[in-house]
Length: 525
Image (cartoon, rainbow, N blue to C red):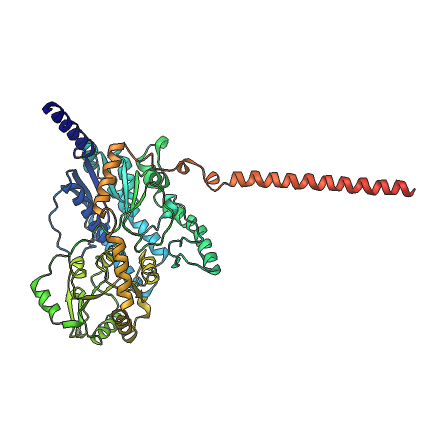
């Protein structure tokens, strides 16, 4: 009996070992600062804390986390810094475009220019031979890359490591990934449409869907010389090839905010990695919030990269709007950049950095005023906090369209903000309980998943490592030429068959008519 019991215990231990693989060697690659780094840091920590050996390859020096105190990491980091000239050029580029953001002028051209900046930085990254040689010798099992910067794909390919792509926003690159996106109900990126479109909206969406292929080709062409310089001609990858080669695509979004749409087996929506139960805020801040009594407070933050507003007139309007409301206001704004001669509203406190997730989890919060970045959206949904958005660039417009469509809040373009209408918008959202009800409903959807986001991330990464890659999840369409994917050869064949049948029918009818009329003439004669 004892022998049988020991055998059973041995079998159970073997089964447990089979399902709990030994720690893998994982490289995370992050070449963008701001919220992109914060997300990749969370990903790295989750994997490191669960028994894997993680190292991050990171570009530093872009200055896109002003006011943030970088904590120590439980994993090692291999870093390199851009040269002084490149840093100055990037700083000038971003400073100039900040003004464009608040003027409503940062459209597709900004994205093209940003990709050109990334391509220039990529040439520097690919020349970090000492670091790349070191990383290659480490023989990592897999890389987890921030897919927003295309350079991460070339680095992974150069190192010869299979990779999982993490996209920090919504599914805005569906065309590049080859994800089915029927324009009848899936809004094209930047269309600012919902999934419920009338005829004219579907027409607009279809035209933008066609145009997005041209736009994507323009973006990918920017990185062509990277492949030409660093890969031999017989194995030179295109960016499109590298997108399709990803073992998984993980998007930092959830269907509590995203519209329902078709996915492929290797496309995962794991939103809310940064959203978590709140920690207590500092005593000083707690005392300030307590002064608000039942009115509560609102939090204002326009993203990790923007610590101030470059338009003084807009700062005045927003500040004046805050003076008109009863709530306390915690505003992430660099005090040294505050306009001279402008007195901060008496109910406003400026902070260089805010613990956003912790404040969103505070019982007295009433509203989040935000740029609409996906990390902020997911944290707001997680904690059930209504939103007033000021979209500036990128996916922020799309995100806030979804917020409004699901009655979780409203948004106002920066160009339309005046003190009175901004104050009215705040009063409307805070005073109308339907917004709070709606966002709480979405919070239940997000929180009630069978597995929390960190467990989903961990489980899928381990599945890919154990199964030797995600080839079983990727569709065969990735290997088909475009004319086969769109069935143009089948359509052409069927069209030819129909044309041939119509031609034969017409010839037969013509012959019959000729025969009938010939017989009539013979009888008459």
